[in-house]
Amino acid sequence: MSSEARHIKLPITADAIAQLRAGDSLRLSGAIYTARDAAHQRLISALGAGQQLPIDLDGSVIYYCGPTPAPPERVIGAAGPTTSSRMDTFAPRLYAAGVQATIGKGQRALQVRQACRNYGCLYLLATGGAGALLSSFITQAEVVAYADLGPEAIRKLTVAEFPVLVGYDAHGGSIFPGDEDLD
Amino acid sequence: MREIQSSQITKVVAELCQRANYELPEDVVEALRRSRQAATSQVARTVLDQLLENARLARDGRIPYCQDTGLAVVFVELGQDVHLVGGDIYAAVDAGVRQGYKEGYLRPSVVGNPLDRASNTGDNTPAIVHLCIVPGEEIKLHLAAKGGGSENMSALWMLTPADGAEGIVETIAGRIQEAGGKPCPPLILGVGIGGNFEKAALLAKEALLWPLGQPNDDQQLAELEQRIIAAVNATGVGPMGLGGGETALAVHLLSHPCHLASLPVALNVQCHAARHQSVTI
Image (cartoon, rainbow over all chains, first blue to last red; front, side, top):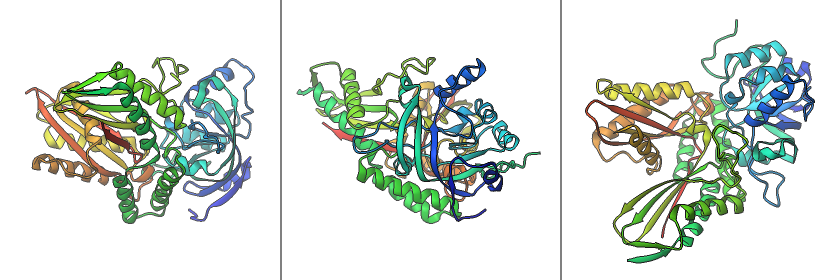
């Protein structure tokens, strides 16, 4: 594991993903989409019904985040991650549909780590509760879908040097102590 | 008899909501600093450095420490000799939450119907209010902005008398191990033992508001607090479940008489964003 952060320009390439290992420190720059429980329900429902999705999932990064409202002089309020495991039932389907990385906090079900390996994807960790700090790396934010969900709407964020750790890599590896190797 | 206007309650609750969300209490910051000094891995040190920086940014910038600005849990100690005028006390508290969350750019995080996730009430009401009557002419309000992630890892068990202290320690440590990084360690644990099903849970929530790290006045209970924190830290879960540091900053335990056939044990988990403030009118 390297302790030096790697700077990643989004969208991240398959080659770049293949080089990363659980525990690597990254700084992301580019566009990411926020989505959590309610938005996932709608996305999965639309995928299942063969409907047009409100965002292009291919090559995207999904950040499990419901920010606080932006005060007048800021682009976004506090914006740390929510607990990823609540979206575990949805993640493999979205990885299969082209999502390259999800960002959240905490361990996830085995099926998610397996999906990262099977689809060549990543699960990244942002520090839980560091809402003010993480918002300082967000330069633009706009609601792009499901505005009626308020904080749970899908927002497109532009991030600059957003700090994350690789939680699950594309080779079955995990940052969490005690996680056994996948067979 | 002292007359107090309900509008006073609304005003102070609105202030408490904002103060709680921007200013992490000094004793929590201090505990995070100590935890940072004792951390044994690079990743744990980095996480704790981020949390300390986050506390500074939130306080200086008047933006929320965490984006989950919580459900408002309000403990009200209403003096017996207070005559409250101008409206219902619960409505007054809700009006304060509504105002505080709007003016403070805090997040509305309450759904009206637990079965309909698109039913956000839009204003973070209703608050959850625990009211008791005390002697005197004052009103003391203690507000906790309680986030969902840590609350979701809380639990209650109806242990048996034979399970005893040993059972309590093992059950709590097992729960924290299972929760891993999800509740955002490092944690503060509120434990209620005895009472009954609902009393134990309320005690556990009250225990979270105890001065950080102050032991229970009772020697036996203080020892049990120590055994619990030792067992929890021995799990190795660590900051964000990544190991290399303390899993819990403190354990506070409150006890109450209970039925001779029961040993109710409630665990209310609090993350490092232990946001609470109080005021006396």
